[in-house]
Amino acid sequence: MGDVAVLVLVHWRPDAVAWGLARLPLQGWPLRAVPGLGFAKVLGSGRDGGFGLAPGLLHQGLFLVFDGEAAAMAFVDRSPLMTAYRAHAAECATAVLRAASSRGSWSGAAMTVSADLPADGPVAALTRASIRAAHAAAFWRHSPAAQAALAEAEGCHLAAGLGEAPVLRQATFSLWSSVAAMNAYARQGAHGQAARASVGGGWFSESMFVRFAPLALAGRWKGCDLGAL
Image 1 (tube, rainbow, N blue to C red):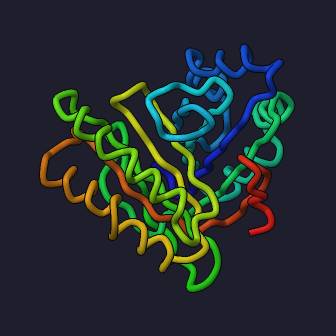
Image 2 (image 1 turned 180 degrees about the vertical axis):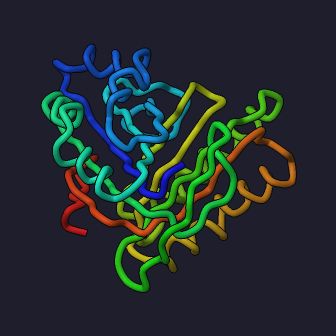
Image 3 (image 1 turned 90 degrees about the vertical axis):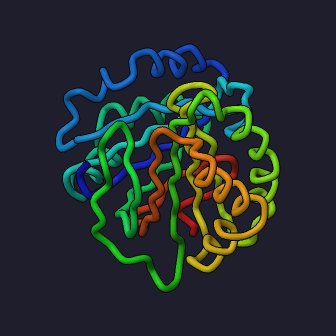
């Protein structure tokens, strides 16, 4: 992958649901001519933008990786596709990000690390996994407790449950007030237990865990004003 990621979260207007749902079967087709784009995933979401098995019709995401900051910012600020997304959205949020640490891969591609995590201010995390079918039940048994802990975690500004495919290909994006807050959630409690179980049990055929330094945050999603962070 390139070294600058863009995460887009969108909540469609009720009258734009059909337009939004059409993004899923189209996948990367509308993105084919975007300059500097090296990697793209169009992502569904759980109900209300959460993490459950029930699909959400109103919430979606994009994860994109560009070959530099200029191309990433040009897409966010000036691309016709982002203009269309915003026109159909009740809420639309964007995060332009540089990876500060990365482990694993997504569809065989790994993130390039090109930043340090800030000492103060917001940080972001992306986790994604291809879950082995034999371990799907175990994964989803651990999920509710980890989700509840995330909703109550101190310093979590935003958390989105995303999916490349139902049940077996899942992702989480979260935005935190500090590295300390992010670490406290990731390593302790229900999430820490689930993470250790997944590693020890070989639940995933592929996974990627990335921490990001935000370059630009804008828009709103589920009431969170990213530009104010």
